[in-house]
Length: 73
Figure 1: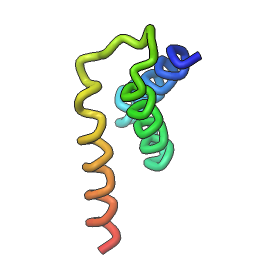
Figure 2: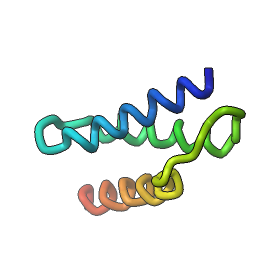
Figure 3: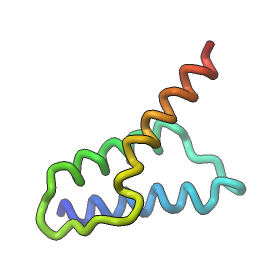
């Protein structure tokens, strides 16, 4: 169950990145998927293998909030 959830969140984020020039992904959806993925990865459930970009997820969330705050000012 946790392994499947991680796969789905990764698919959502991957698809969002691959199609960003053609389709717009809701930023809150992306933030939600990223946040939930981070929580699952940090829980270290068995069977969840790391990827090369997992360590960048928190940075992406921080960038999102920073850009959102800048845009609203």
